[in-house]
Amino acid sequence: MGTGKTTGKPRAHSKKKKFKRKTWLCHRARDTDEIQEDFEKVKENGEPKQFEYDDDLPGGGQFYCMETGKHFVDAKALADHKKSRYYKRRVKDLKEEKYTQETADWAGGLTKEILPPAHGGKKS
Figure 1 (cartoon, one colour):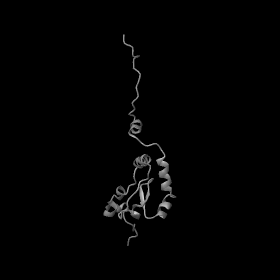
Figure 2 (figure 1 turned 90 degrees about the vertical axis):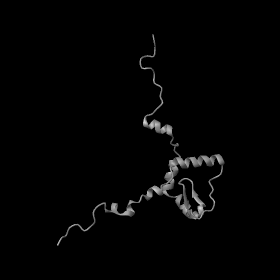
Figure 3 (figure 1 turned 30 degrees about the vertical axis):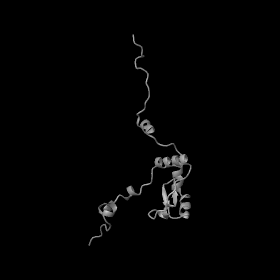
Figure 4 (figure 1 turned 45 degrees about the horizontal axis):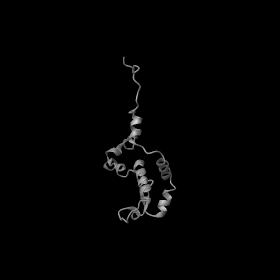
């Protein structure tokens, strides 16, 4: 009879409930400024962040990567992670200067510059 299109409609996944869940909001990585604050705390204390054994965390919370803020199952998984592109990119981002409110104001054009008087500044 008909030899028309046999596939479903485009963007048909948007109607299905499992595709509407916004899981990417829940599993979002920590921001670089939060991790830089952790590194500042470590420099002040002189000791790295330690976790007590916790069954809810992968590997009991014993294998933690400070640069990415992730827990791993074992030492091999942590070592493999430190060879990954994601880890190396994050380390490179952490070496940059910390983003502050002053840089945000500067980028938005809200500078605090003092301008000279418009009409010479002399009163007679």
